Length: 76
Image (cartoon, rainbow, N blue to C red; front, side, top):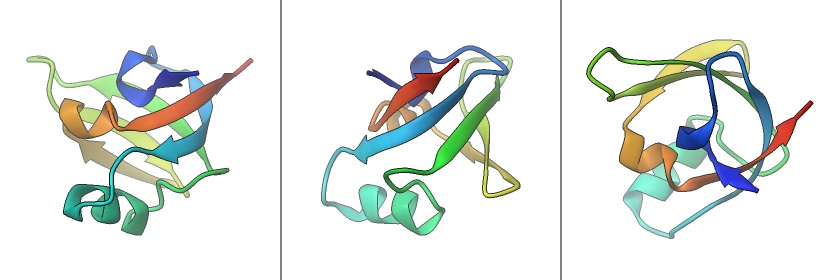
C-alpha cells in the first residue's frame, strides 16, 4: 500500500482509505475519493504541486499534502 502522491504518471490504483476526519478528508470524499474506487494518476504540476488525477471520468487537482492522505493499492 502507498499514497496517491507516490504514484507515477499513468498509474492506476484502488483507493483503500482516506486518513483523517477533518474538513479536508470530508472534501476528498465528496470529490469521489472513497474506498474501493479506482483513481488514475495523470501528472504533477511543473513546480510539484498540485497533483492531477482522474476519478469517475473527471480530472481533479489536489494538493500534494492532500494526496498523501489518500492510501491506495496500485493496480497492475
